[in-house]
Image 1 (cartoon, helix red, strand yellow):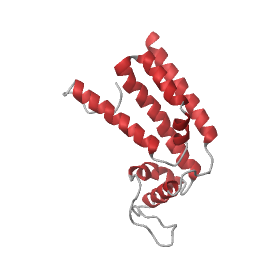
Image 2 (cartoon, rainbow, N blue to C red):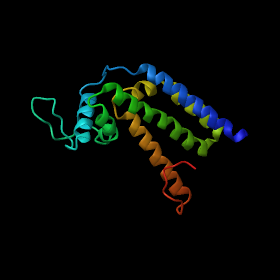
Image 3 (tube, rainbow, N blue to C red):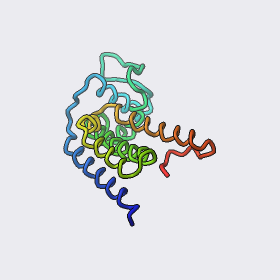
Image 4 (cartoon, rainbow, N blue to C red):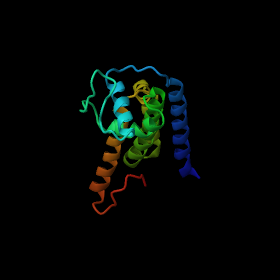
Length: 168
């Protein structure tokens, strides 16, 4: 029974973060031109047109920002093209994923209690909440970085371990 306590606490922390994040979602874009470009590329990817921005004087066929983020929000753009709140909601889910991945990575190194404390500090950071509710690539890239660190740690500790992303 005691081993479930960290999982329940992590779940509550993620739900609290998700609730605060939902309260922060609106249709305002703070960072331009990055956020509109991400929305444009996601829309063109959802329409199977490749990386193309069509809302300028002439179409742009090159990517000047992180190209993976529009790929990640393209499914959202397929249902809600150019929707700022929908893209922010998708990014918020990556914020929750970042919290979970950080906990699992830290729990292996310092134990579950210290990992929960570290995750709590990450959760209450105003910038984590801000970037998790913006159309920006920072939070998804942080998730990907933590996934890479988990895989690298597994590879170093046990070279025969399967290269799985799922925490064990």
